Image (cartoon, rainbow, N blue to C red; front, side, top):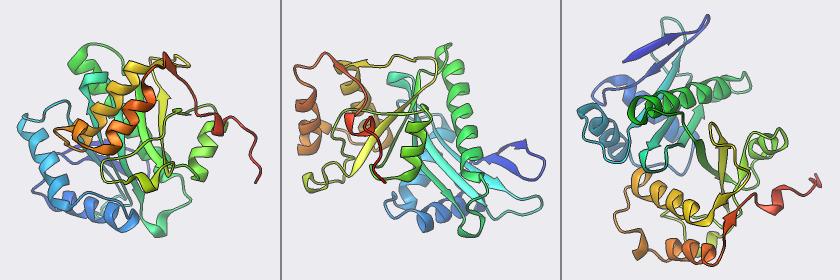
Length: 237
């Protein structure tokens, strides 16, 4: 484990799936978020990264701890998508009794720095952008859009276990890092979605899934993909 210090709490990157902190951090994520991979899947991600055999980029699990305490206050996880030089935030969870104190934002920034470091180390360049999927009606997402930090892509996005009935439930957002283009070529967005499915979700044959095919059809004939226009309209609430 690699630790970095904060005056009142510390952030630890959990690098060994065999230790108790890995299990505690995953348990916190599963308690806070309903749509989570099984424990065995997440532990396998850590094991492959520790052994240096992860394909398509490493997996990262960060825990925020109070001094002298090994129970996580917050946990975050995500994968570096080597194919598109981007970070993908899978999960960000804060313990219920610690919410509203800014811990999630602090830990998210640490995860972004972890992605940046991996991009510099493995590609010798700055991280292009960070990606994440979140419910479209999320107040957190709307706030970041207002602040100009993230751009929800103009794409009806699905993760692999969503059915077509859940269309427009999630938004796929992009947070610029080194790459600040307001639009991306449509073929690059297709590669981004495929990288998420293959690396973050371990789907070997995305084209066998009807929702993946549907997303690819949305991109056919388009030159670029910009911001989802629904997020550019003034809020009514």
